Length: 411
Length: 107
Image 1 (cartoon, helix red, strand yellow):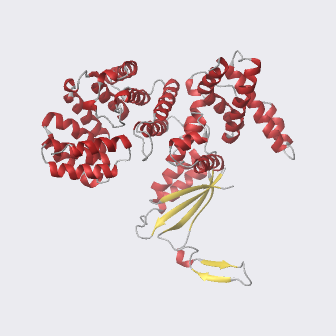
Image 2 (tube, each protein chain N blue to C red):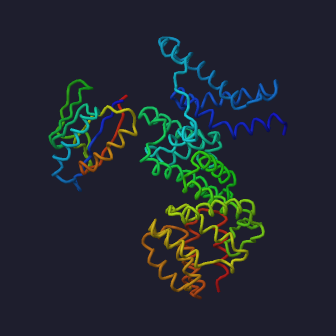
Image 3 (cartoon, rainbow over the protein chains, first blue to last red):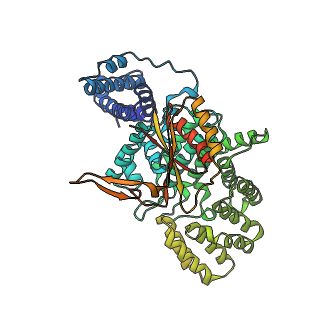
């Protein structure tokens, strides 16, 4: 790769969201901002090759994109709207207040993750406008046709414009709920990468987990005081750290107890642990942790054990107890039961799991957990039936392979 | 920016009928804060008449244009700066009316 290509890729990573966000604020139009930003990057590919990389690529890109946007508006408004054109030439927007909270990129993120948009639309829009992924890339990531994804994004942008979804920071009393909404979008992207669905996809989609982590790092840089942002980043890092050990050579998912812990990414674990320690200190000072922070702490306990036998299950169970109080959902209760099995035995855990049947009858992990508990209790026939159901429901190719092997090993 | 704010009732699970005092108080607030443009409750859908004059002669049909379990029980028109303000007010309105609310922008 040439230096110029490397510079363009770096600029795309570092500057895309900044350029789109700055233009969106100035022109009040996401569509225009996105198109002008894309044109500026296309121009950079030509010009930087010929003239060299400018000393400040970000400023060069913003200036070029702004010119493109004005050109476009001039063409569109030539007929009748001289007044608007005149206004555009004088940037009347007030200068940005210093500090992250005034960063245009935060406005962009909150707009893309607005609760009035459907979840799928929020995900697609965030990856396009903030992440800078192309529409075909996003379509591929979510296994939908290019035209379907294009429509999804176009419709979301049209709603933002027509319904006037504002391009600004949420009010202080809305902020926690809106941050939670942003984190839900990022976590969904991460999970789709970590446990990819679809019969023909790779079991782990490195592109999506990496992108989710990159965007969460950005949100963390913009909202450094938010404990849940730190919690989600730690959770992603500690999960991603195990990725190298998660899939066997023949494409089978490897459960936590069978993973080669030497293959875990020490650097990511160290960073994740550091964030968890930071949040533990805040909790000790009286700041109640949210669900991502608790999930991160659970993962910190797992990644602290050199061997599965060294796992501090009582600590994990205590964290799950804390989480259940915060989020009494059946899925949390199911995960808690796994820790209960390690402390009180599979029989006690099975009783808990059986109590969740009604809520989780269509959830593959419910049947997989139940199958494992039944297997440990020597109830092979029932275990086999539970594995069958789990295999039927699992959408991940690696997981299906793992469950099938486990079932076929039953005696 | 004006929004049509629709109050949606459900025939099989109607909202409570004692909401009028709370709605009046809410309207007073909308007026005081400068958001109020128009408000009105609607008579039962049975009282509606549909007129179709796209063909040779006007055809009148007794009843609403679409029969459904959920129906429009009343409307507001609000003039607010953006959707966030409209949604915040609509969140309150849903409690005040004990009914679902739809927020839809005018063109």
